[in-house]
Length: 500
Image 1: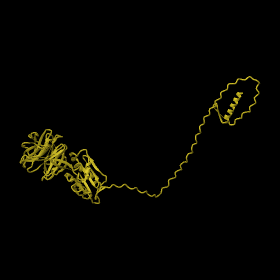
Image 2 (image 1 turned 90 degrees about the vertical axis):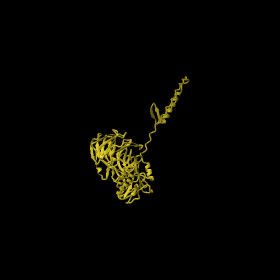
Image 3 (image 1 turned 180 degrees about the vertical axis):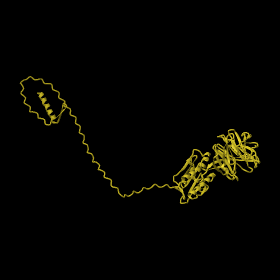
Image 4 (image 1 turned 180 degrees about the horizontal axis):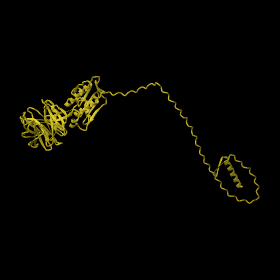
């Protein structure tokens, strides 16, 4: 009975589950869509009377309910419909056959140039330092001439000891504030050209660099037809012209360059006269420490004289020789290899040289040579000599044998008197004096005998001889009168600006 009861209970549970949908049995899925109803139970027959009770069976364990099926995953959501495509672009409208031009953008303002000369007139003047070297005033003269040639306008010039004006071209280290400010910015061995308000400022560290600055101004401004021509001259706004060198210009660079060179001299010492009769300055030479001067007897035919020795540093006289028969004593040179002074007699004795001991100032020997000359110079770099006389130069080896002879065209210049000579490693220098002693020249040759240039030397006394110590150049002059003797000056060579 109890078994049947359990069977019915199980049947009902099964029917109930089937009515709810899906039954998972042993891995199979059953779906009961229309379950049949349980049949009516049949009546049980009457039990036998007084039957022995059957032993109650042990209850079967209730079956564990099947685990609830895991819920099926929700289906993926339907994708959203694609957005509507962008409408096709409308075709560009046909261009207007006659479009209206867009307004031009405003042009950049043109630089405001410094109008130094316009329509043939100018408010400007050129100003230079009242204390500047003579060559600076000559530079200004050359600049004024060049500007007038190119523009037809003559700009006035004045020293800086005049009142300042609004419109000025400042040349060199003037006392104007603009010049001082520009000079303060200069590096060593340099120049600069720039505009400061209404003034054009040209500054340089020395006179040669100033000349180079003016040649630069000429090439980039004065010779530029966009900036300079008849009736006009302008300096571009913002333009700066400058140059810086590693070192100062050397004499060799100046002599071998293309620009004019001028010379100036500064007094160093006065070599005394020996007596009223022996007082005419002639030759000069140096061993690097001492200067030696030959001073001859006065008179057209005067022969013989003395040798003086001076300390170049202290400017003091060290010694003077006894009277020596060296003829006219026209020139001296120092032979560093053999440590001896050599006197070129000159004039009638132009084939004779006398050797002098520099310590005792006594004669070592006199020799007669085939070449001739009244001036002489020794080249220690080649151990050779050059002698000058009249219109020629004789080149000699260490034994005074002629190796080359060249003519001197400079000697044809009327009114100039040939004097002594000097030299350095590259060039030979001949000082010439005008016959009335109002001016001097230095004619330069190289050691092949080629004439290089002629240099003006504004000195009113008669030049005599030259020598070189390191990078310092010296020249001697004779002053007539009671203070005769030898006047030693140091030479300075400088580039000069001249209108081309």
